[in-house]
Length: 136
Image (cartoon, rainbow, N blue to C red; front, side):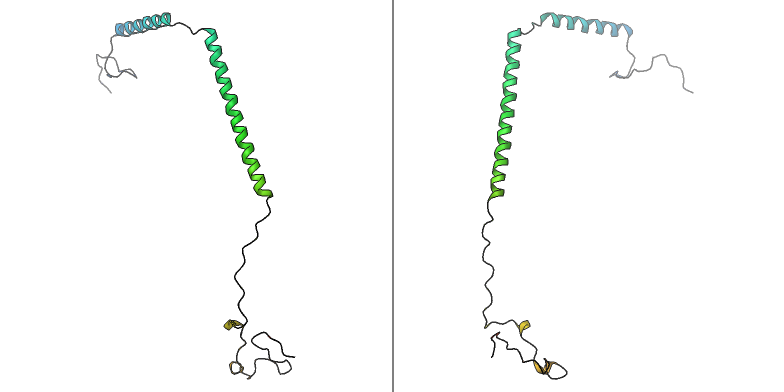
């Protein structure tokens, strides 16, 4: 158990964490209320025409911003539509085809000595020419 103490427990939000005199709270509350009422009496409300003019200016700015946004959206959409409707540009020429004299090694048929039977082709078909020209 805890031992009884003479001081009341600290309240939440009390910066010192120690006891506070009950009269001090009432005095502080009265001082704050007096300051608030004095401030409220000193405030002069803004004239209605000035408030209405401020509302009109805000409305004009809002409409101008909406119009500028619409213009930007329409311009972007139009530009994208024009780019989408353009015909495709001609493709760049591909790599030049190899000349007939430069035949890659993979296109050359294997030599007859590379096959176990001695010939790479059946005896009934003519032997192909490596340059691609035809013989009559």
